[in-house]
Length: 202
Image (cartoon, rainbow, N blue to C red; front, top):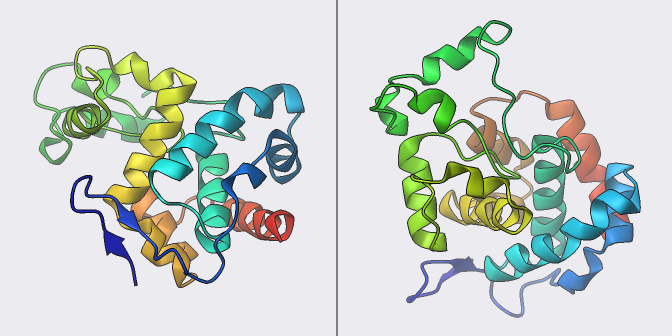
């Protein structure tokens, strides 16, 4: 069962939910072990990831492990916060242009509102909604999602918007991937990160 905070619209798990743990365990060293990445990379990110997890009640072993695995894959282990744009090599990117379901109504919206953040927020409409909730002018300055604090918080925002705590709580990791990716692209890597996160977080 989850609870919906009446002021924020953020879903939270009950305080006595089995598996609750201290978010401070999502430390630079833990992220380094999970992602097999240097501390120099994970240290700047850890406080922002912790803040996003606290804001959006990603606060159990199950939800934390799934979240850390998914943002790790989506960002290439905290390397990328902006989708690499090259329609010649990635022809499917051309389909972003004019995607009404993404709110891409203006010429150039496909590239302007490409995926950004630790879970790639994509499309004018999603930028507008995310920006409104986070208090950021993302339609005017989409590059703000490349700032680490905003990149992490937008991932938490996406996680909450799509009800991913519920899926994580019941172990539906494939369902989470489908909500993020639209399919199961990179699932083997996501699962490997998930298994490592579960082990590291104990």
